[in-house]
Amino acid sequence: MNAIELKKRLQGFALRIIKLTEKLPNNITGRTLGNQIIRSGTSPGANYRAACLGKSDKDFLNKLKMVEEELDETLYWLELIILSDLIKENLLSDLITENHELLKIIVSSIVTMKKKINSDMNKSNE
Image 1 (cartoon, rainbow, N blue to C red):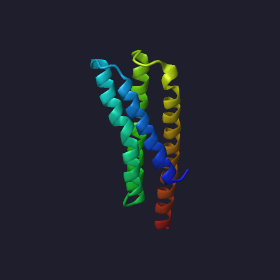
Image 2 (cartoon, rainbow, N blue to C red; image 1 turned 90 degrees about the vertical axis):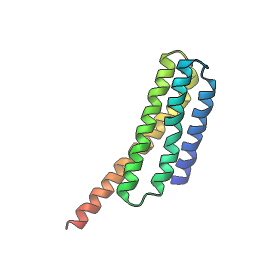
Image 3 (cartoon, rainbow, N blue to C red; image 1 turned 120 degrees about the horizontal axis):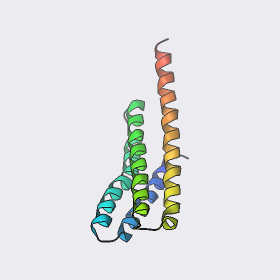
Image 4 (cartoon, rainbow, N blue to C red; image 1 turned 60 degrees about the horizontal axis):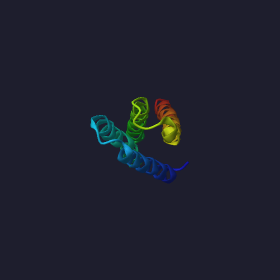
């Protein structure tokens, strides 16, 4: 998957999170979880775009780690929404699957970038 495709996929994920928050009940629990998940679920796309503009490989890596953290946090809020019976699990299963897949892609990119940075460091020390 190239960067343009991943940007679009993360943006689509953010839109699905936005639509989800609109379906949460207008009570203290719904509003609180909605506020949390809207922040964590929309930020991976923005952070990935920032990563693509990184000034160095290390900068890119650090921003990718932020994307990973936000996706993991979003998964937590999705789980809490299910556990608190705000929305049934079967209605969120596709969104959770997409969250897991995006996490795998980002983690794979992090591993690849770490290898590249380490390789570049080893070459410069020779």
